[in-house]
Image 1 (cartoon, rainbow, N blue to C red):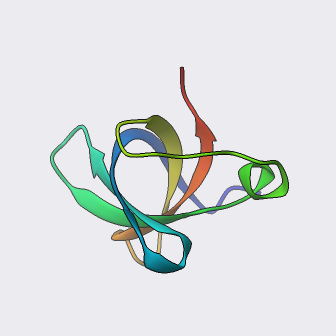
Image 2: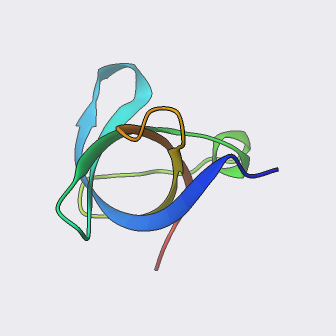
Amino acid sequence: MSSGRQTEGVVEAALPQGLYRVGLSNGEKIMVSIGGIAKQTTVRVIPGDRVLIEVSELDPTRGKIKRRLP
């Protein structure tokens, strides 16, 4: 069951402890971690990658990476 809205963004920076800073198309910047299927498989995320993220309803400054986009 999905608990947030899904949107696209671009990874701006890789941070310590498995966190990433992602810029959204509306200018917001949020902190995300890898979650779901992306965590179970080996997904390499580097700055500049486009990703699909799920933004938390409770804290709109946090989210999880669902998958990389081509």
